[in-house]
Length: 120
Image (cartoon, rainbow, N blue to C red; front, side, top):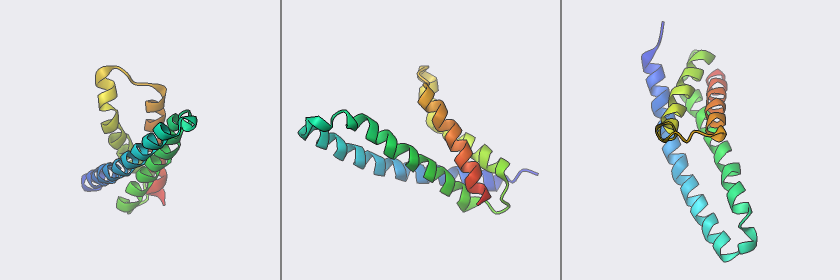
């Protein structure tokens, strides 16, 4: 039997935590951009550091979001919630036809970490 409340609560939790994480990420990248403008030697790192900070933050949000709502420790629910929540973030890329390998890796990583988070 499908527990719709648990699925919806998991998706809503991940979306809210994801928006909070995006705000933190935006502040971080803004500061990094200001730093790279004042120190041009660090400009090449300015492209790599946001990904190195953003991906673990995203995966952490997915795992925590799944761990907060899961009660029965069902990995399949975590995978479904992860797929739904990550697909919301990929909709703009799909609408413009600009889905890249990084987007697919974020989707797969989100599903895996949400499934692992629901197991914990």
